[in-house]
Each structure stands twice: as structure tokens, then as C-alpha cells.
Image (spheres, helix red, strand yellow):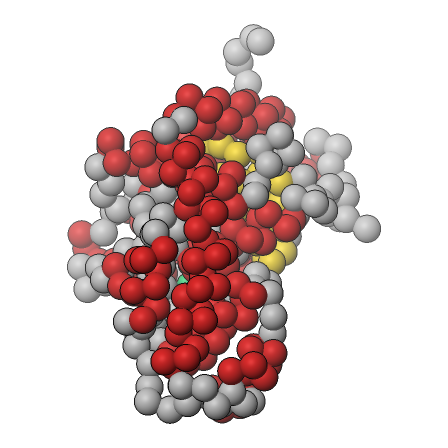
Length: 350
Ligand code: AQP
């Protein structure tokens, strides 16, 4: 039995173009986990500025992610919805983790390599230490479970390494401060990579992840796309010339077909086997319109609600502000404990 109370934390970056991958890989899990755990869902604005963001657009994007959370079914009365920059503990703990994590660990992070590309010397230092901030986001609340898409697996492993090293480095001090020496100060957080589709691929290239930053808007279905746009994007999705197979084995080496079947299965809450049972032998000219109808039926209500919430900035800001107060109340004692363990001298009264 863990000494850490079960708690869920996860986040989405407000970098525009929230898409079907974010929804199926992360947000649907967020919604489901509210029934079983206390949850914090963060709009990670400090992560967003690791690459340049126009300030006015960033503010709108923060509200848009909060709207997407609510429109998809996260209940702000139950779960804590807030933006990261409003709780100072994220930055404070990230600094301490900058001093715990090793250069070699960060040098192995594939997402940094992909995002920095060839121009590594010109990448921000924030982009390099991004995984340390992510570890801080999670461990500031001693979160035990983090629902994420598959692309975040390596960062979650690093979070566990950081927690383990902090627990080991300060083991004596952790015990002296009255914490359970066996458990340590931080939990070894479990990634939950189990959404209906943990890796949704680009509609233009079945071997590339659907991504907010893909320059082609046709590569992704945005959560704000209207019915016509969704149908057009699915119609134009890259496919091969074969009919759909009747068994999932037949999807091997057919990444685009596998992706569309996976999306259909996730949206219909069926298995890929069931989808192929219904559509095996069909041409894409039959399957694509069925997929478009399903995607519109599932996503249009979310887009409608996001549009409505877009005009209600007072409500969104109130949700985010109240959420930040609740998050801060959990974070403060955890952060004070870290400072005491680390040996920082508290000198201020009150
Ligand atoms: N294609 C995807 N399939 C399944 N899950 C995905 N996620 C992202 N893309 C897919 C999951 O969505 C959550 C929020 O992601 P994020 O906003 O923090 O950043 P990201 O992973 O970097 O997402 P993008 O869309 O690819 O953004 P850019 O283009 O800016 O890098 C995470 O749980 C993520 O796993």
C-alpha cells in the first residue's frame, strides 16, 4: 500500500490547433479518470513558451485549452482546472530539479532532438530542460498517475528517475523530517498510456504523429473544425488503393489505413477488430464517409460548446482562477517540505 494518496495530474500546452490526437490520446482519459481519482488538469503555459508564442495569442490559447477541457466533459467543480504560471511552485520545484537531473539524462530526450531539429544551438535552454519542468508539474502535487499519449512516455520515465534520485540523495534528511523513509518524499508516478488511441497519426503521412505544429492543417482534425472541414480533411486523407482487410493483421505495413481504422474504433468505442468486421472488404470511398459522419457526430458538440465558451471569457477566467487557488493550496506544503529537505533556511514570518 503506497503512502501517497492516489492523485492524477496532466496537462496540455496552449500552442494552438488542439487536435483529435490530443483529444483521443489525453483528454478523453482525463474525463474518465475524474470518476475514480482527484484530478488536476493544467494548461501548461510555461511549457508553451519554450518556443516563441505571440503574447496575445497565448492568452487566447490558454482560454481555448480550458474551454476544450470543459467542453469535453471535465467538471471544474470536481477536477481542478488551472494554468501553470499561476502557481509559483511549478517554477520553484523545476529549479531544484534542474539541479537533480543530469545532463546525460536530458541529452537522451528524443522530443528535444525532434523539436530543436538541426538548429540546436539556437533552441531555448527552456526547451532543453522542459522535462524537468514536467517532472515538477507532476511531483508538486505528488501525483501518482499521469494520463498521457505515447509520445510522453520517455518524459514520464525521467520524472520517475528524478523522484528516485531526490529520494535517494536526501534519504537521511527525508527521514529526519518525519517522512516515511521507505516511500521517500516523492512517489514514482505511473504513466497511464491507455486512451482509446494513444498515438493518432497525421492524415497526410501515416508514420508521423498528428501534431499541433504540423504546417499542414490537412494533417490534423482540429477540435474547432466545423462539419464541412472535418469531412473534407477525411476525404483528402492519404490512403492506399486497397480495400480494407477483414483482419487486423492485414493492416500491417498500411499505416494510413491502420490510422483511419484506429480513429474510427476510438470514436465509436469499438475495437479495431469490430470495425473491420463491419468494413472489411470496403473501399475507402465507402469507409471515409462513414468515418466523417462519426467524427462530426462526436466532435461537433465539443466544437459548439468551445465556441460558446469562447465568448464567455469571464467564466473561463473564473474557473482558472479558482482552480489555481485550489492547486496552490495543495502545492504550498509540498514545496515547503522540499525547501526544508533541501536545507533552505526559512527566514520570513507568516
Ligand atoms: N498524435 C497524438 N496522439 C495521441 N496523443 C497525443 N498527444 C499529442 N499528440 C498526440 C497527447 O496530448 C497531450 C497534450 O500534448 P501537448 O499539448 O502537451 O504537446 P505535444 O505532445 O507536443 O502535442 P503536439 O500536438 O504534438 O504539439 P506540438 O506540435 O506543439 O509538439 C499529451 O498527453 C500528448 O501525449
